[in-house]
Amino acid sequence: MKKIVSFGLSFPFLMGTRGAVLKSVKWRMMSYEYEATCEREEAWMPNLYEMTWLGAKEYFKSNDIVLLPVGSTEQHGPHNPLGTDHLIARDLAEKAAERTRVLCLPTVPFGVSSHHRQFWGTVHVRSDVFKAYLREVCLSLKYYGVNKIVIVNGHGGNTRSLVELARELREAGMFISVFIWWRAARQRLDDVFSLEERGHAAAEETSVNLALHPRLVNMKRAVDERKRQLFPEASVGVIYGSDTIDVTDSGVMGISKTASAEKGKGIVQVAVEELVRHVNVLKKANIEDLLPKPLR
Ligand SMILES: [Zn+2]
Image: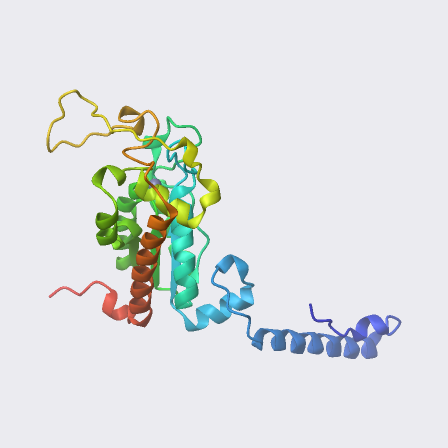
């Protein structure tokens, strides 16, 4: 921290007019020092939480876009961390932030995942609460001139609420896009994994975990479990609100033992490429062109 020269403390015996003059000199110098600090450029940080408010001011004065990672804290089988969905979202968003110099916000770790609650440690919120909370986060950024937000979503159960939010905020003058890594990397996923390897906590997700944070994965506990049906005779074209425990005992839906860091790295690479491409397009886009069209 820069030392502020204090005349006031050097002459504490001075009173009256002279004291007041010296006090004013002291404040003028402090103000000069402060303004000089404000003008000094702060080194680029990809994360908002690493910045000071001066750095944030500098960023928001010339940028109207941010990345917001969201996920969940929910069971991912006996071998993957509960944080799988928000950790993957965070890592992809941070990698894209570094490459695009678009600021990354702190990750929202809780999502819409009550269907996993029978597995210990799953922490979930209702969809209306999730959406309302994120709406507040987005609108608080609008105050600083942000009008484009790329939400990097790591949990499928959040998608419906996020799309609803995007539609609502578009009416309020903000453009929200929702990036979903398994959609972005669909082609590569189809090439690398069979259908049985692509279920919840199966080889697809486990491989991405192994690529990004291997110390949190315990492959000795990995299991393969075929997803069962809630009814012996499943009906076609019917959706019901079942829980994960209804269809799997381990929390894994499919084959997870074939996971590898190598497979995961390829997926991460494709997903980050797509995210970077999207962020760069949105960065250049004019907000007026992204808002709802008028009645015709
Ligand atoms: Zn997941």
